[in-house]
Amino acid sequence: MASLVPCPNCGRRPKEEFTIKGAALKRPAAGADASEWFDYVYLRDNPRGAYEEYWHHTSGCRRWLILTRDTVTHEVAACRDAADGSRLEERT
Amino acid sequence: MSEFRPILRPVLGTKQAVSSATLRLSPLPEGTIIHVLARPGEEDMVPFLGSLAKTAAHAVRPVSPGQWFIVGEEPMPHKEMKSLFAALEPRASGVDQSHGRVRIRIEGKMASRALSKGTALDLDPSAFSVGQSAVTLIGHIAAHVTRVGSEAFEIIVLRGFAESLWDDLARMSLEFS
Image (cartoon, rainbow over the protein chains, first blue to last red):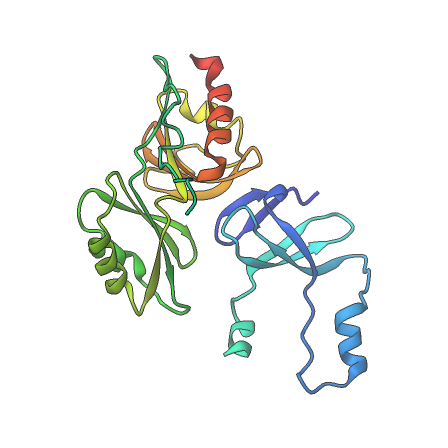
């Protein structure tokens, strides 16, 4: 079980400190058509295996994280701050 | 006009310090707590904040990326705080939290033993050394924990939760008193 989450800011912390906020999907371009937005907002896959999702470190650093988790074994492969890397560039 | 007048009193003022040979739990004076939030992209804030909080009475405690607390034992006069806020701009903003948060001190040989009953933070000196801070849960209450000495911790908690956390800490300390 992913009971210890390796927060890049705080270190390993129990999952009780976090809130799970669902799949980390790539946001469609603003002008994308309605079906693409419908997919992004409402439709979710339920994969077996590696899965990227948003976790919020609610009772810690209060940062949004992107966690790579295996949905079968609950092993956490990676955890990074959601503001790091390409996402930050996209926003500016 | 309403007859009601708010009375400012230390929230833990009536609490008896828990004290024994191996552990001491005490409320810290309600002095100054300033929350500093850096603008995105600002780096190397720590030396800058250190130079602003230069008087020995004020300490800088990291909270999370881009956020710090400046704490002090004495209330900061309004004028001094205004000039501190002005000095922070434009790199960061300051928010006065002196009446919003309360500090508690727990110290002694058994302090980390008592504290670890309530938090999942690794309190071993090798993982959590003097001067290090962490935001974590103590029970269900969010708290900011700093190791201020080899056997001493400072806990910053929201004022509304302070009494509740105090009672929890007192109960966690019973075994050692």
